[in-house]
Amino acid sequence: MRIRVVRIREIRDESKYVKTFLLDTSFEFTPGQFIMVWIPGIDEKPFALSSKDGFTVQIYGEFTKKMFSLKPGDKIGIRGPFGRGYHLKKDSKRILLISGGIGISSLIPLAEEARNLGIEVDILAGFRSKDYMAFIERIKSLSRNYLIATDDGSFGVKGFVTDFIEKFLKKHYDQVFVCGPEIMMKKVFDKISFKFETQYSLSRYIKCGIGICGSCVIDGKGLLVCKDGPVFYDRELLGTSFGYYKRDEYGRRIYFK
Image 1 (cartoon, rainbow, N blue to C red):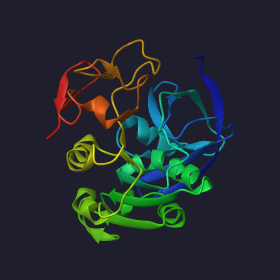
Image 2: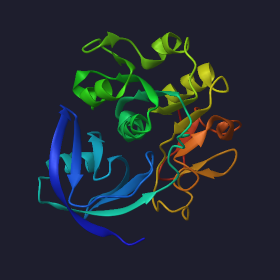
Image 3: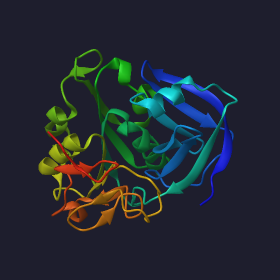
Image 4: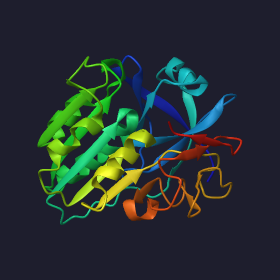
């Protein structure tokens, strides 16, 4: 797929280290799908769509620092949307969304879709601190029950998102959707998978975005995050490297601590 050049229409400050970039174009997409964003002379990186016309960025490395320096009216290159998104059953009555950090950005449009279908939504969202939060008002407005946790207690309750799962497991959910750091998702996997129908959105080093280069492979079953995912059912992740290690841009194993 060729790169489209688009303009940044608006930039919203979600918190100190998180911004949402709204574009002068919109996408037909399934929540959970991603786009490849290209900054000439810098690099191309994948980002989950957080709305039909935008994506959300947490500052981290050289690429995201450059993103944070852009202004409305600036141009960037876009490819996509790509990948398999979340599968929301229209006959679901109640669902649970569990996010860690910037993972909330792919789950928010799913929450909006669910509410439009009359599905009850509970949200358990964790952040490093208030400086890394995003979509707090949307979480409150879209969910029937919600809990927001921060590692340092600077907002909501203090603790990791995985500390509060049992609070929600007293209810029945037709589906559970999870997105966040992989070590966090593996803890969720160990606690709730196969008790509910659960889907996980994974992040890997992605170069092509269309299943050709193999950089984003999940060892064990040869699954490609960009093509077979980024969203996977719990049963698909059994017997894979999920939760143990990923590979960097050189193919070296990076183990999760």
